[in-house]
Length: 392
Ligand SMILES: *Cc1c(COP(=O)(O)O)cnc(C)c1O
Image 1: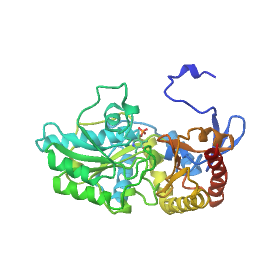
Image 2: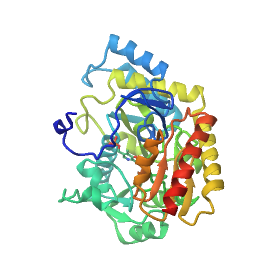
Image 3: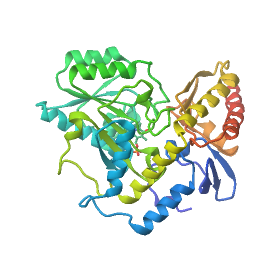
Image 4: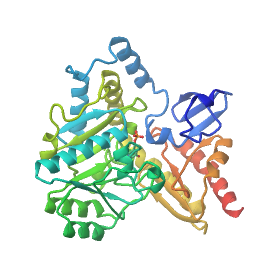
């Protein structure tokens, strides 16, 4: 293998997949795997979806890329489709989650400057994840991701997640805050679900202080949590929201959406992207949205999550090594009392793809087209692995 040709940014598992179909993947030796990660919440429609394949083939044979120097009808159509589903007002398209958050951060700073705040600050959370670019890693609440890349981008104020008092304290003591950036459910941080009225309370503070509520829905959005967007669980509308991951079902595309004054902040010259919102990416996202709507995949996410949580609760709920079983739609976290990274390799050997995040949380993000039999197979494969691991 020519692995030496690559910078060693990843510690990769010793497997390479050569094809997929729905929730299944096959490696280069022909061994089959059940995918309960979906490329980290990206391939929500599963692999090799025929409608996506058809859209991509057709669009590629017509037009892949022009430029944002010109009008792009498919980008306008995608913008409208997202606005219809989010009640936001305007979209900016990039190619990744980090780029979507960069747009949100730039937007918030410009918004602050326009209000006469010279050094605008954004409130961010501990254990958060917002990306790997300099601004987004500075916003991220994880020292491992920041270490070695100092000096960090300034202008972020960090508070504990799910702690309204801490945000109130910032509100009482500072005049230079312009926005709060938060994940409705922390994904990389370990599938951490805040209290039932957390977003509502944040909304209240933002309204009183004239701050923008900016929700990073890159992992939680696009039907993942049992609603199209996680804020719909509390019916708390953000001023700015970011999307990526499942938006293109694997074709790179990210979006920053805004409404109200925030939607008017970026003007010609203030931001841009060469590829952002090109015809190929937009065609893929439009087809993804169409299929999610037709098949009501937010309901599937809810059902998959319930089935997984029930199965794990029954089999592992009394196990003292299992600290917590968390579920928000098809976003599942099994927190163990010890680091459990080795479970990933053990599951791989059994033909199951899982993820471990935050050291001790088994995270499942299955494709939203997974059927009940496949969900059962996830439970039946994973439970003995976890039980065995905890009795070692
Ligand atoms: C994955 C993720 C990002 C970063 O997205 P990239 O496409 O890797 O840049 C940002 N925020 C959240 C919540 C994510 O899950």
